[in-house]
Length: 502
Image (cartoon, rainbow, N blue to C red; front, side):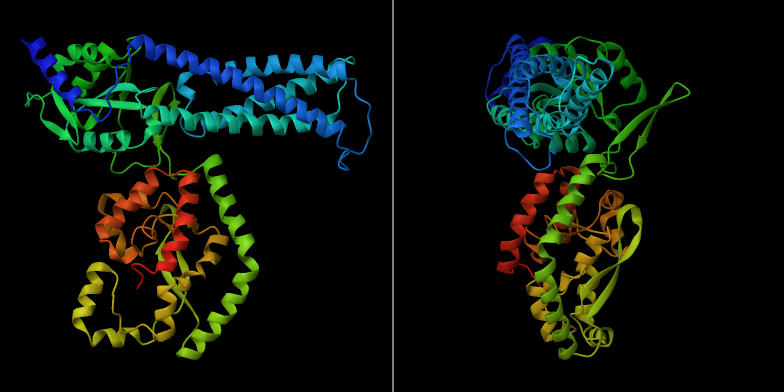
């Protein structure tokens, strides 16, 4: 009876899946083998090209950076290239660059490429030191190091794009069950199903409760049964991933699931943190006195992610430095002539990890703004609720133009230069606004606030405060350097259209 119910429920789910495909477990295994082999061939090709171009760069181009003219022993360098190429591929394999768990997600893959190539070059330097028969030009080695990292990283990036496209047709996906049907499990399903880098094809939900089979839980995903039917569901859907929403089960149930499925071949058991609505920074597991303890990272972006984001910020600042100096001068004169008071206004806001700082803006209001607002109690109440006023009597004529064109925010570039803000990020908020974010306030403070962001390019003040919060959370959870660049590009037409600006 149970098996019949599972088959009926499974058939119903399959008929309502957004993507129809039938890839057997054997085919899924083979496609990963083919991917590893393809990456091996790609790496070999890119490394060969890098060594060849390094040879041309050092010996044929006559660049002034290389002081000594050397007539190369071409056959020696060909033998050297073959040996180093073989060593590179072996090092890549040793560092897990053909291992499924290190592919198609995050910056880890590129970090492993950098470490592996650097390791190979270090071995060459050591070999040249101990063996007099191995003599090579340092310029060739330096060029080979840079070109190998560049070419292999770019080829790996492009291969990712191909795989992500193939996932739309059902390839390189792992059938997945989410255990739990509470708020956390739905949040997990939302995040995992809408971000194709996860590589997870969520089939449905399983819970310890005897609910209605086939009941819709989230979008097209349905309740498939209780924990007693888990074996049948794993077999029916060829499940490769089990994700436990830990807040949906008690400790005893989680332990039982681990004992039963934690060590099963070709089945990965994963546990959520139980604090999905709070933790966006990720966690680190560290053993202390042989006890594994989980530590929450204090910042969402660390290491190479943080480095790339700051590089983008400073590159843009450098390119705009001269024209901005002229614009700053003109606006400062206009603001001072238009109304009494300083040209620059300081607003106390929340920064990374809750550190407060003064965000700079061009003054857009009369200095006696509070007195003016006291004369309009209905507008004062609207301001307390939305933190924005569409028709604000405190705004000066110059300020009205500056706000519509977003030029009033240009002084925040100083905050970007000081490392207090970034060009792209969530909205900066005042200390009083943190209560509006409720449980999400901790998340908001794990990244630098931005001059522009998803809120800026999605309608600005025309969207509700709740939608602004959701956009900020989406940005924090799904940050990539490419998302930042996309937002920067979209900011220009959003500002020119002046949609939602007041």
